[in-house]
Amino acid sequence: MYKHILIPVDLSTASLAATRTAIAMAKSTRAKVTAVHVIAPFSPHAVGEIRSRGPAPLTATEYERVAQRRGEAVLEKVVAEAKAARVPCTVAIMYHEKPAEAIVDATRKYRCDAVVMATSGRKGIERFFVGSVASEVLRRSRVPVVVLR
Image (cartoon, rainbow, N blue to C red; front, side, top):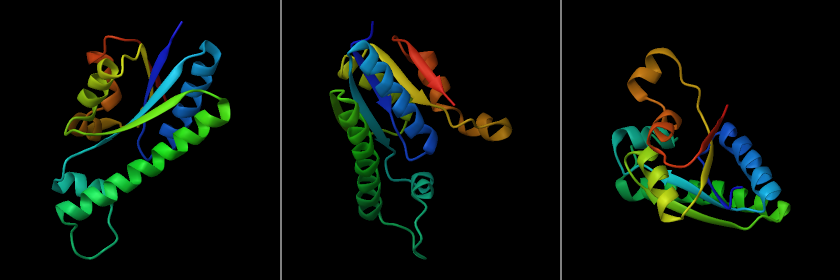
């Protein structure tokens, strides 16, 4: 069935739950997984996503350092889950202003034949203005996409 599953991960609990499902799918089909974390380039919106506790805004260098550290931490969790399940796993951090594009690009770059990801479940006006990464991946992907809530 599937030989290489892409797992886009962020810092949400839904993302980690989707990771467990993706790893279980990979184990049952003897597939490998690649987990990817997308970091938005420095911008006021991206800094808001980091949710810094300091009174002063983050500089671009500080933002990149914090975002990289958080990305590495979430990817370490994926590696631990995959290792426990004995599923081969690689990880990558990508910088891109459009996460959905980065995810679709990653399917080609890493030759993945499926994507398993979570959705944030945004509703109403927030979804209209912010959009849904999962919806965009569904529209653009050339491989099957499993979206979990």
